[in-house]
Length: 180
Image (cartoon, rainbow, N blue to C red):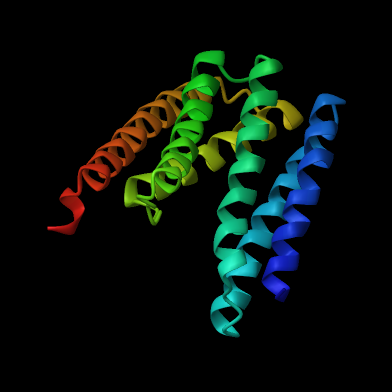
């Protein structure tokens, strides 16, 4: 266990508190928790790289913690009708597809090393921005309706594009074309 791994575990622990704050109407607290989680993500990555505390466990835990936090918030914001349900379905389905593809590859002895694609990084960044804008809009009544609507469509498009890119990579891997 390394310090970055403990920080990542802290992010896992934050998730239910952020979700409960949001469901209880303490949107400012949920926003603050989300920002703390984001900062801790940057801190654990910095410490891992700077002090050579990278670990195999951290390589798995870190992206899982990020996904658990984002997916949880997308689901809650969908339940609260702050994000369209169709967008929540797209975001959650993409992540389930990726997890399923990795598990299937492992089960049939064709393990797939997952490396985030550039489009996936852009997608995650815009998902985070959408969550922050949505939480800030609710908490502070900024009336960012137009900005949120644009972000919803951009996130939907990038999420679909990211899922497609992973599907293509996975299909090539399963067919053996990635070894050529």
